[in-house]
Image (cartoon, rainbow, N blue to C red):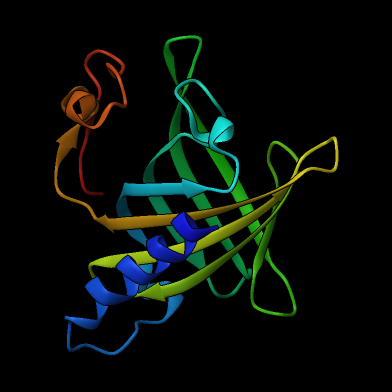
Length: 162
């Protein structure tokens, strides 16, 4: 729990250095990269586990009250490209079924930093809390992720701004 708190605190401190107003969700649509993930259950963010994600893109749609999330995970040593659509709830959080029931909230956002948390309840009823720190896209190939222990990405895949 301390790790989750420190993760959120880190994101807020980084974001506080910027002197801009928090953008609307639609302004957050675009290319993002995972900078940090913390979990109350470290097993779920180990290599080859479903929440060890490499974020690619977020697309917020205010008219449909959705956010589309595009990301990579490693499955049995190979990269798997995923897409989930989260539906906005009455409380402003976004819900999706992915490895159980998830509720995702943006805790802080600027044009350069995104801090979010996700509550997951798996098929066995076990609750896991995740804190995620994302940063604005810089052109980066999946192969360049080795230094961050993401492993070797799919050959020939390069992420480019849309």
